[in-house]
Length: 196
Image: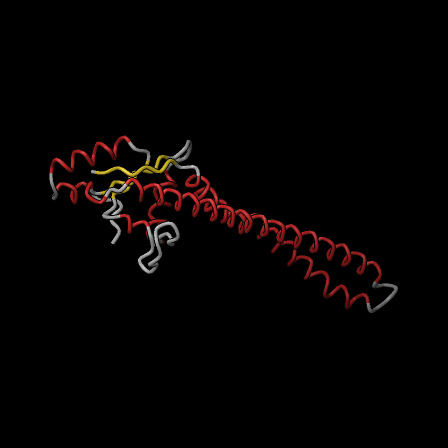
């Protein structure tokens, strides 16, 4: 079970000396997370070693809430572990795994954002072309009656494609930007494991 953010009430129920140490570390760090074990970072359903293991959705959700508040600068992400569980070799493996995960996810989201943006722009351009053809068809209706059928298809299709394309450009691609910023920050973060 993940216990990332203990409240002060929960902390004071435990050892007072340990509480003072935890509170000092929490004040000095950019972002601090208290873990019961290394497993709190990873998915419970993945039995692979730490170097390959999937990152926990709970961990990512909690990290996203905290990182969102940090507006600028390089993040320092501190994980506080019980001293008897701290292992410097595991720290190195997990740090590399986290950076690799954050970087790969950032690349995937950036590619999706660019693809969505191109799709939206293409739909908008095609919509404008349909509307231009509809304008031409409206001029030609007086000479050829079958142009009215063409007008019926092109005009609403053009409007729909323009507005849908603009929706994709301005709203759907923006939704990916906040996720992209989150993973950009974490991919550059200094990850530190500290015993308490």
